[in-house]
Image (tube, rainbow, N blue to C red):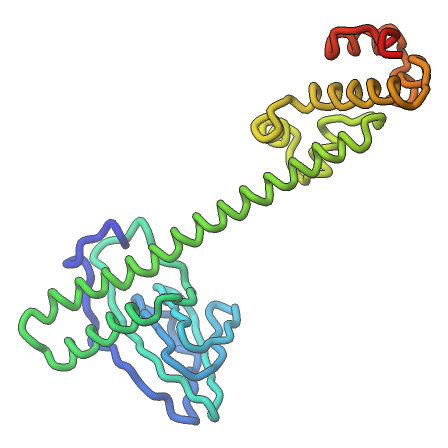
Length: 263
């Protein structure tokens, strides 16, 4: 609804802030919603079912019911709901629509807008309709902004998880240099596709998967030759090389020396 002008909002006479009676119950309508309904909980606790999905609701829970939605609700008679509902419609189909349910974090500013809207339409002051439409758009912007901020936070979280996952795989390769690693097996360990894993590994570690595997083996081979007393053949064997000449060529390529010179 970010793309719509305020004058494209159609105000409806159904709006109020109400303190629900202890026996209050929102029964299933004979027909689905014909328009939009912004539904916000100020206090109390209850259960709302939207299109078959159940929500435990309390202060800050906000819903945007849309055309065709089916809803029912009940509340705790010992802690009855206080809520605001605002019905409205639009002259055009919006490109962006807030999600059906959101827990509002900045309740103060959101509740201020709701209070302004209800007061305007009750008192019917000068310029009421224009201002009410502006407030409706502000409310939609508030909900859409919260969604975008949540997406950014989720992307940052996902990025951190990916970073840790790739580093863990790199550490696993270093700890098990003699295993016959493959991009497929390592990608599966990271729960990523081989192509995506290879791309992110290079970005994060600075080496391709294959070169990192070889580097880890050669570094381990150099350590074994220097400090363990192993022969070149023994070191090559424990690191998964069946071809001694191939091992020697890779060793010299990465260290500039023949393995016999280290030994």
